[in-house]
Amino acid sequence: MVTQEKMAKILGITRTTVARALNGSENIRPETKEKVIALAKEMGYIKNYLGSSLALRSKKVVYAFVAKSRSQRYTDEINRGLKAAQKELKEYNFKIEIIETDINNPWEQLETLEKVLKTKDLDGVIITPLDEKRVLEVIAPYMDKVKVVSIGKKITDSIFYVEANYYRAGEISGGIMENILGENEKLLVIDGGDDNLSSKLYLDGFFTRVNTKNKNIIGPIYIENLSDNLEKISDYLTDDVKGFYCNRYPAEVIDYIQKEDRKLKIVTNGFNNKIKEFIKDEIITATVIEEIFEQGYIAGKHIFDLIYKSLQEKPHNYVVKIRIVFKENIDNF
Image 1: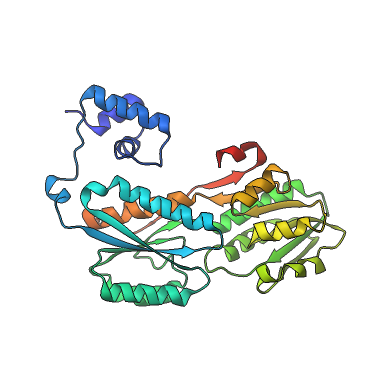
Image 2 (image 1 turned 30 degrees about the horizontal axis):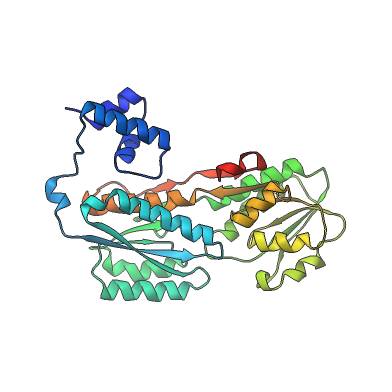
């Protein structure tokens, strides 16, 4: 009998990689997928689903509450990961309904979550919890029948979560800044506030790292409603400032700084088309980002296992990869 394990051994890859290739996953290199499919045809492999009875069961519906960020790329990539997981598992009548709510409005998320739990027939919830404590209060009465996975933030020890280590990403940015900033060169750090998800952790990680060596730091300077008050940055952007970091709205902030006609050493966190252009033009040295697609994909696959396979494993977390983007590897992103 041809099994995925045998195919994996022949190709020198993991069984999970073989399974992803056979299920049409986007989270795999095209050349690897082609090799797996070619070998499957050659060996006469036939997919063995979880069981014929499983595929015929009634539809299982999961509602995914995605934080709609100012960075459209974040929202789009989470959604793409969720949809990729759903596509792989379509044979099992498994569906993910995506609901986006404003990242700056935790109450909107809570109200929408409560409404769905009360009015919809659902089997699972995937959520980026903007207020972990209140989210737990809302979902707790339903957890006997509804499976839950969180993205980005931990709700409680009993709930599996996909972790993006934002603090570590901030630390890495700080390490890069240490290496490009000259001894005793002045660094300006702007605090754009807490986005209920990543920005505070970015700042904490960055500042903790740079503050161990560089004592010539201005900040962190908190600017309320930063995106509407960019001009306030100029109050601190003195002629002797050589390095710059901001934990929120980096594309808009750096775009504004360019009007000051200043050559600064800049490292950031986050990614979009504007930041990509800044890196290409050597305005930004590097950005440190999390694998966003992977967050949605892993969340979708894990909640499927919770629902269909009745996993009894001890709840834990999955930490997504962190990437450093320089001009030299920008075309990979």
